[in-house]
Amino acid sequence: MLFIFFILLFGSFIQGASGFGFGIIAMSFLPFLFTVKESTLLVVSLAFVLSVSIALQLWKHIKWKSLLVILSAAVVGRYVGFLILSHYGEMDILKTFLGIFLIAVVIYLFCSKGPKPGKKVNQTWLPITLGFFGGLIGGIFAVGGPFFVFYFLLIYHDNKYAYSANLQISFLVTALITIALHGINGDFSIDFLGSFLVGLASVLIGSRIGIRFFARLSQEKIKRFAAIVVAIAAANLILFG
Image (cartoon, rainbow, N blue to C red; front, side):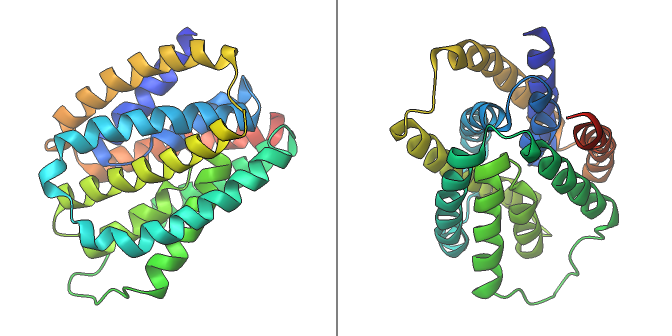
């Protein structure tokens, strides 16, 4: 439980300070203790609480119109992810797939140079594509954040508060969809409650600390430090998961 607490504390701090990262950090380590399905359900449930906590603090910066297309596609992706996780979530091979995807995220984090100022952003096929795959990967592995990060960095590259606020609403809505679908399907157990309560304390504390550092810390340094941690965990998942 102490291990779970500190992993989730670190993940929620990273998300509070940079806008995303909770799912990536948590899913890099929790599958060593649980199945991918159990890990995903715990992380998604806590991500919902975390996103609500951060979104309330950044509420005035939300740009609702920019959310419509990408969230519509994300909801469809989440439903497909729910079907896959329900049927294959107990299989250990998913840990290998998760490790491979996390390595891909690390490569993106290290290689991404950020959006070019003044570049026109497509408002149809791009948010539909990114929203669907963000919802799909998030529904299976709880790490769909990079797809939403990419899109909101493109349209809010000069407004980090709008970027983070819209990101949290995306996480909030997609997490709620997953919780509802798995709740209806009866996938939550009594054992889940203990881990959730430990995680709840972690995310409330970690996000508060992260938000305080949001205006001060270099997002680039936070991103690279988190990428190194994820790379180590991803390699372990592939080799020993």
